[in-house]
Image (cartoon, rainbow, N blue to C red; front, side, top):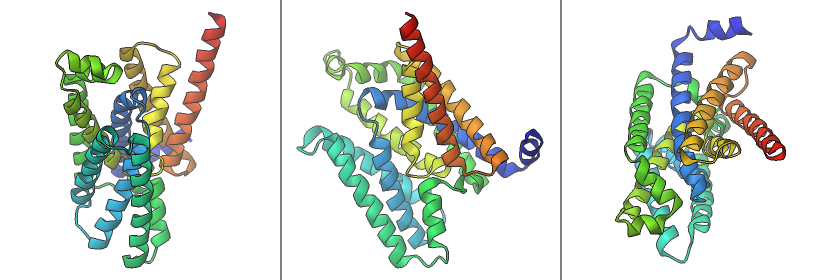
Length: 280
């Protein structure tokens, strides 16, 4: 098995997939802690379906770079979700559900009506589950992912204290002069960027796993925000790398394998946390 992995690592497209996968996992884990604590975990699921709809339109239009359409549309919808959840009668979870199912349905409908591909089922499966997308990235996709990932990491580090305050007590943050609305908007935009990037790794249906599992796993073991965030990042990167290596060795879909490893890791962390609680 190790010989097979070493052999595949000699190919540039496999190395590119590992680099992109690890970066996406890292960014997802950093933001995941905030989204879980703010009880807005399913924004990833909703935006992933929006991205699927935008991807369907981009495919029909035969755009040379689909990111140019998918990214702005997803960011716009992230802002709409944030505003809708805060200022109207349709609260966050209901708004996400409405936008999610609508985008998914319209996206699939558009692909069925206008798509001229001879393998529509394969195209849809790849988009929804990330069957092989991560292994077909070209140099420009990898460069874009690296740049966007570095921007996300830099923003999180620079605004760590503000994000922390908005996450735990938004009213108190406002009282101390923090522009909570602006930082919530920043979180929404970053989430949209990560969702679009993560579609190549796990597909639009499995993206929530990259956001939720690392955060929940680290919360089983640690209490402070800093410790949870750091362990979440380590957990997510380790699971992503391990899942992709297993996928290469076993010939399984990369996205599903990564999520399965995340789920197994959560189970281990939950058992350790339960044992600590019992022993204490």
